[in-house]
Image (cartoon, rainbow, N blue to C red; front, side, top):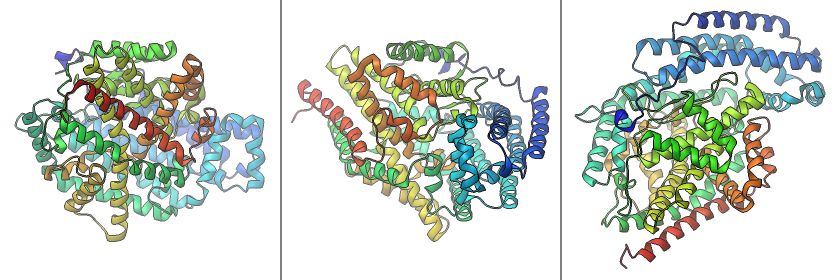
Length: 598
């Protein structure tokens, strides 16, 4: 596949990080970090209550440099593992890093605990001092965790145990799926899922069966992994006195529980939008019944072409360039600098991501490129992350470049919208416009409605694990189907095979509570993109400034400059209204073309 698409040589170069797992510089850097950690502890332990603003600034910059150096090794370890999860050496190296990093974390915990426990009378003048203005938001964030901190002895114990906790179970999950072969041909996850976009229903049906069979063979292990991570989260939340399973994620995202609930309620109130679309799609496909494996089938008016890698590159760069030469220039660095890993290959983890690495290096993007139109959008999406991470890292440094998940999705979804609009503007006829609209709507549904349905599934499994104990794999399937049916109603028939498909989604394990951030980002971007359409080029500097701001302020504060109020329930409904308008546009095109006879 990679040879056919011209992506076989699109592999990243990790040497700006390290030359390999046996690079002698890794051990040298670990020893340097150990020495720096010991010195930092000796210099600041027990002394924060008497620290001056200048000394506080020095301590934070020292801590930031230690964290950056550690993250550099961590990025290399994970990126190296991500493309060869079946390699014992890569796996062992990643595990060794987790164990080493947990020791660093253990010995540095005192700083966060002491700083958070300072009385406001001492802390507030320090926060207001001009000397620490660059890190004020970072320091304020640390103090918000004060109610959830344990004693230093307890925190150290948890840090010591962390390498054999959730991260280890996540690694087992990735190993398991990366090595699972689907069907008689022994295909990878990405290859078999790609067939769900095939125009031939028999091919889609076969893909569904093969994927289900592959998952089912591992379901006893996958259910155990899920139950273990659910229990780990339950125990951690109880120890840290978080009132709800989602509370820690909301705190990390710097948004109030009420904002998240308003988002969830708004999206659920408009489940009529995807239901309406899938009824339309059933008619367009001339099917008596639309099954779950039919959802991604191309429309009869679609000319699903294989998009070679070079053409994908041109499409994405042109769209970013039409918006901002600066954005295009940064995106081009990824293509020209070997910052991307594109081919599908055995042992490579599924999905796609952008790893920020560290500001002194650069981000890396991983995709599994199969040449579909959706893959072009995925490249645009991950490059949006990459541009965001690149700008924030260069402008803000390591600590302040880390954005909350809810705003981390802004640039990625905006990048997808740029490519979509670029293609729509160049569409040759109504059929091509309809095809593009439908593809984009389906992507939006996956980002908004499907993610909120998955959030409801997460909510159900976390609550049931806490109230009733371990869930059987059958119970996981029941809750999955129930929350999916709420979204689809009778517009899509969910097969028994689909009951197992909760088990391959890594977000539930890697970052419990994360999925609502996709819906948050999509609806936010719809509002921002509408502003861009109204304001034109004058919008661009403010948007690029938003990306460069990284996590230096809270999402609410950064978005105030655009007149956006996240605590306004009507804000989310406005974003959903834009999706409704796009669906109406598609419905009008169908009516005009006469494709569907009344």
